Length: 107
Image 1 (cartoon, rainbow, N blue to C red):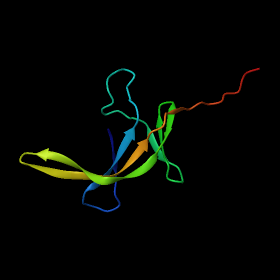
Image 2 (cartoon, rainbow, N blue to C red; image 1 turned 180 degrees about the vertical axis):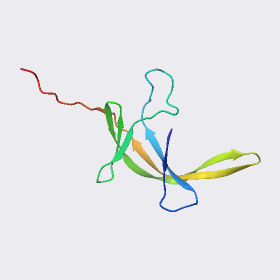
Image 3 (cartoon, rainbow, N blue to C red; image 1 turned 90 degrees about the horizontal axis):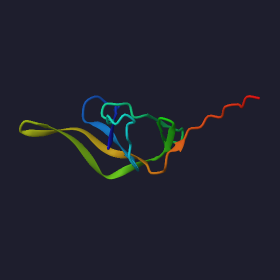
Image 4 (cartoon, helix red, strand yellow; image 1 turned 90 degrees about the vertical axis):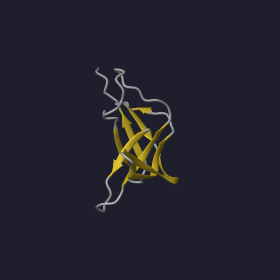
């Protein structure tokens, strides 16, 4: 599960996060893991379609509203405190498409 923080317009209150759902598995080339690393670039088209660029691949997804919101909690001694709510997820269920640049052939 990858977590994205989305800044809200208002001040104070709980933050709102997005859940990013990918089909398949992501692996780092060096085997060191993905924690704390840049995963890729997330963009939205003018129609609101999420586009995720991962290395030399592009994934097109859709935004989905969750039936039941999820709460992100932190544990402190003796109690839990809510940090954020997750109400939407970005679903990428298709295979990634390679990004291919067309280079002119030399004569």
